[in-house]
Length: 90
Image 1 (cartoon, one colour):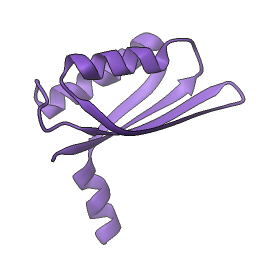
Image 2 (cartoon, helix red, strand yellow; image 1 turned 120 degrees about the vertical axis):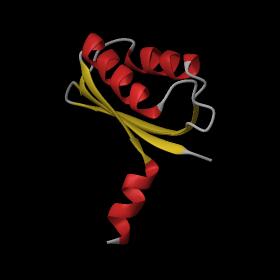
Image 3 (cartoon, rainbow, N blue to C red; image 1 turned 90 degrees about the vertical axis):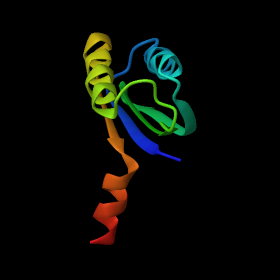
């Protein structure tokens, strides 16, 4: 299984989760785990997703989801799980 970590941070507005999840479904990405919180009007979400059957290259996913974030007024990042695993091995 290929996992990717997606983070979303920004001012809370209606529809953030819906827009991100719709995009993921369109790209054949399954959400494995999700946590989100809103603190003093700011939204924070972290997702672990399965990108094994991703319908586009991973670098395109990173660009497109970042662009979607800009469109809805939040910062969105997608990073391969391997990056986090390597950081913790050092």
